[in-house]
Image 1 (cartoon, rainbow, N blue to C red):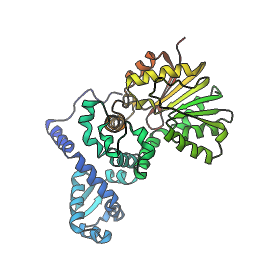
Image 2: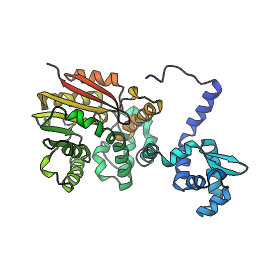
Image 3: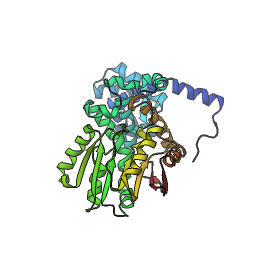
Image 4: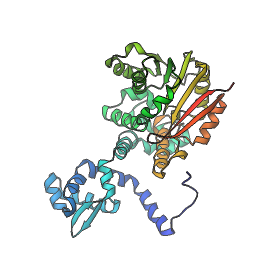
Length: 356
């Protein structure tokens, strides 16, 4: 569905929206403060009767001034209503408090992206993740991931897993319908797909191919569950094109992985996948394409996530338009045999094979 063919705002609405954009960083931080200081929760607990600024200040033992400016800002943001000096929450505030998607996105934006996004313009011009410097001297966030502060790691993994994990129960039967005996899991991360695989199919052996830091995290999780003999590890920097992939696999799996690379890098990776998979094997790609979303908000989230890749992750990747991505698959000598849309939260599963 195309959400972007018409401009339906009046001139006044457009100017009002422009002010939202101008103050967007302040709106974000004020909302987060209202949430984290438990101001929204306190007002919610007051129910339909509502509560006053003074009552919230007293209950939370927070300075009256600070509570006042945040609650007044909450009115303009659309989180609060005020009737006769009694404040109540809106539907939007309810989702800020209770919606997992919203919490995951906010925590990721704040802990991983917020400070570094100041360097977005520089990243656009240089093609490098200039914002990543807030975490140290790393070329990509993937190299840095195992070394980041625990709260940053927690928010990164919560974001990454939220968008992919709900898809696993739906796609597992599809991937294992052909009974592959060996599967290469490229970008295995913390091992969630490998673990789900060996639980789903007692005959499959999974090889996780990833950077040493991520592979070691996955190994700890897999060993703890007793699957040591059914999961192997292949440490590799996939950007090193001189490094061949291990070969002889019945299937290759990449979940929310190829969006971490540029167009040219994706073609290179897929060509090496072509060599690594058996002639009758399949390459499965699970990706959230922004142009294939059912809801405009989902497209928006993915488009904004692209800017995380630009300024924080590696400077050259994104959440792709499916039309662009399909051309990359064809350029790598593969063809899409089956497309399954609307998987999980926002994903599409592509089942690919060699062009014969």
